[in-house]
Image 1 (cartoon, helix red, strand yellow):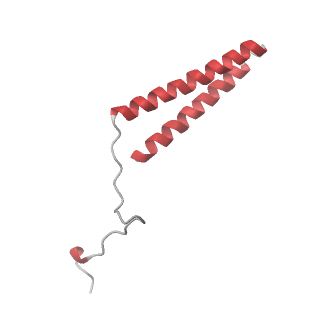
Image 2 (image 1 turned 120 degrees about the horizontal axis):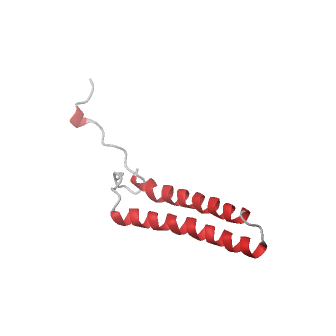
Length: 86
């Protein structure tokens, strides 16, 4: 005989003894932080690349590498910060 739905076993508990919490909703502050951090990553890495290019005379190669690095960092940062909301 199968148990009734009300007699079913409770969901498994986490190691700390608490039930797993559903993901929370992002706030406007979370969006502002990610947007600002992404912009600073791209602009900062591009600026450092530009300054190194000006100093070494290798324009535009280090600028391009800096922009690629900044965009990669921005994507990883956004993924890491929004992962907790999924």
